[in-house]
Amino acid sequence: MTSTIYFPYNARRVFTAAKWAVQSAGLFSHIKADERLFVITTSHGWPIVGENITLRIVATGTCEASVEIESSDKLLYNIFKWGNNKQNVKDLSALVQNEIYHYLQVDDSACRSRRSEIRIVPPEIKIVK
Image 1 (cartoon, rainbow, N blue to C red):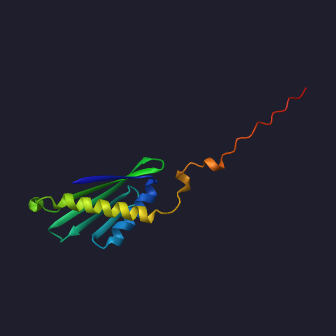
Image 2 (image 1 turned 180 degrees about the vertical axis):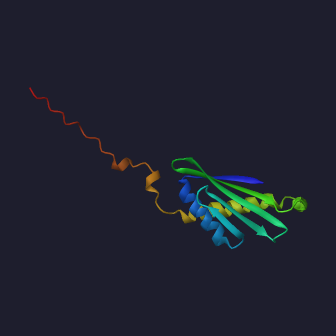
Image 3 (image 1 turned 135 degrees about the vertical axis):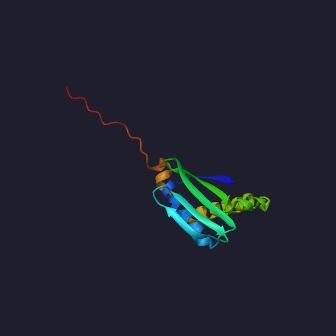
């Protein structure tokens, strides 16, 4: 099961916030974060029966990023859980979205237009004869 969430922040900030959200939730074990690829892998549940969860942060623009949340079962016979992965991805998507927005309540001035700073002045052209 996969879900994608979009954010109006750069990928580095979204990755840092997503990593913080997963670590602070207290629901996951074996959390690994790849700083180069912006990928967070973790697991939920018991060592044999449970889920492997992957969060991929993808830059969709200079100041835009998406978080792809993917859940897969650890063992093949776990497919008989009747849609638990779908509900877990939905819950995790809500958690990550809320925590990222909470974490990033800082003014991101690099991604906002600065219309108030633009001044149009007449050119100073002097003709010399």
